[in-house]
Length: 128
Length: 270
Image (cartoon, rainbow over all chains, first blue to last red; front, top):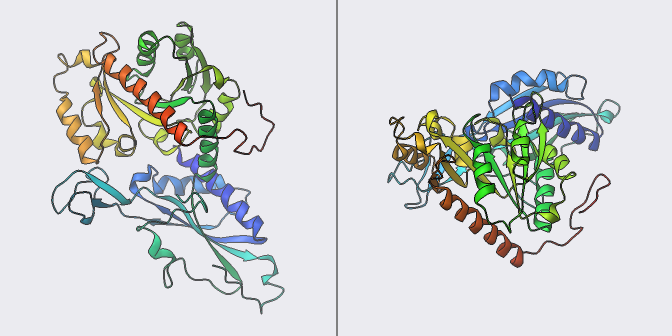
């Protein structure tokens, strides 16, 4: 159950981002997980209410994007989808492949509610 | 991960941040911040810090992982006996409870630090950092980190090691790489341990284990080894010696300067 430890690390990161941006609260957290990250999305969701209790991200919606396993063949260069335990080229059957995606464990974005947003509705912050 | 900005942008996720992507939108009164940092950012930062410490002292750090009871401590005991006596070893032991493994190592005259993780199922970089406060790295050539026996959780945490070694013991069955691809995929060497049992447990086929490792695109060498009858031990010792000299060569070409990294706390550099 390392998902709780990972969830606590997620909350710490979200709290420091909220502080940096002087946000009042956090309305959305988007996390990207690939099957080869070793993290179970459902367990992360279960751990979330425990890890976020009392933090700026308490009751925030947590969205998990599932990132697919993709490989590139070192022999024929073909890019294909793959199963986590079958990273073999679909085109030529070669086992020497490189992982293109599928091992991510990412905090992708957070949506913040700004402290001054209520006082000055003309300011529509949109930072990228 | 990008060393400059710390972001992880891959083919798999770049479409999310492009215009029109799922992350490229905001409602009024709200601010969307694209982050793309690893969820284990804090751990990874401390792991890098640990690696800097090892490198400053030219110490090779090897992370040993396996199921409980696959023979990690027995392998370390055999290694201590066989390794060139000029090479100084230290061991960091991770277990939920007890000092038993550290005691076994200490009986061979080798310094061992026991980390009791309580209910935590893995070691993380912060625990290793704490352990390093009690270890004078200038005295050693190689540090083995014996992780908590578990084929799942330890795979997700960088500790600051240079190399990962995973043991697959014969009684466990040869299909473990297919069942636990995350851990076996990141291994730099796979040791088929308790190989003295192969004649008895003949349903374990080393060739089949090799096939499952190829299925996860692992290029790691595989060693059949018995800490009991010493089969495969010379090859293991050769591998360690080779890795120590490879690391030293690497550090000659990429020297680490003292004080190159920062601390958030008072710290004695031994």
